[in-house]
Length: 150
Image 1 (cartoon, rainbow, N blue to C red):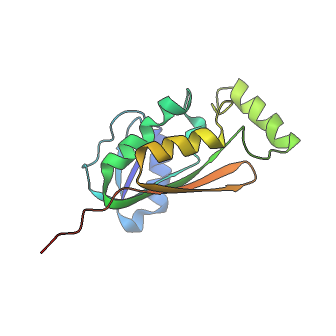
Image 2 (image 1 turned 30 degrees about the vertical axis):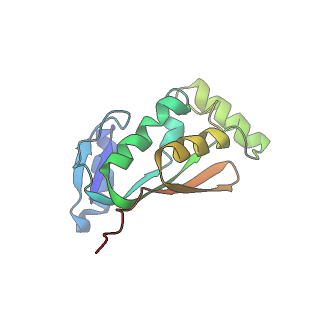
């Protein structure tokens, strides 16, 4: 198991909470290539990460490219992100997103369901999106090895 985050405090707290699994800890920027072995993982989870990353979907999509590189053939990436457009948002949710975006906590003012789907479709063999409130939950798989012929 490997944890990757830019924030050393987050890494320390998370590693302590799951210490029984002896996680490897890597402080890194997920918008850059990950400091993990290519093809070394069955799954990559990214929960409530994307709405905190700056820029638009094409730039944020680098995270999916890096995750795909880390996955074995047939591997899975999964997670969830808070979306601002293309989903039903309540007035309190919109107000909180405006506040968090204005303070630089969130960067999701242009994050929409369609853009998330496009990024996943452009980088994975198959994907599934589910919406719960204003959260987009996603799962995507890399292509599996071609079957060997005898």
